[in-house]
Image: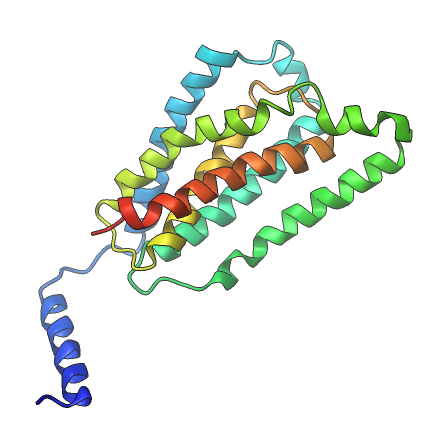
Length: 221
């Protein structure tokens, strides 16, 4: 009968033997592949925005406004943090949940902005500011636009080796949702920080939850 220590050493030797002939991967290969997957999916999502929703008619003027850049600062910062986590989790060594703590920074900053915005607004207008004119469509549109980007990330993962499949799926879904929300800004003319904090974030969270649900099934290698 083999002792537990012998079994462990045998497993280690087997892993070492399997890895011996594996060529080294370029240092930035994983990041480039994930970026390519996001870019490819993003092009499709941009096409969906123009085909299904249309660009906001005042887009050139909106780019001079604070609310437009407030939304992009929020979604892009979430997207960059999610991509960094996705790159880490695409490796066999994986990572821990602590890598997600930077997400708190843009959320807290936007929350502070929303509180300041509401303090300057009469209470009777809070509900309309929170719901805007598209609260019931915004999260689902973000989720829809996240699908092509998530598929692009699945393509990227085909040549990668994640081991924590649920966490990797959640990170990929989070990245897809954040970049989908960034693209949705091309159409959305909502301007309140509390709207963005609630309904944009909900769409991103839905994409992350979908990624966590599908990760163990679609990222298996």
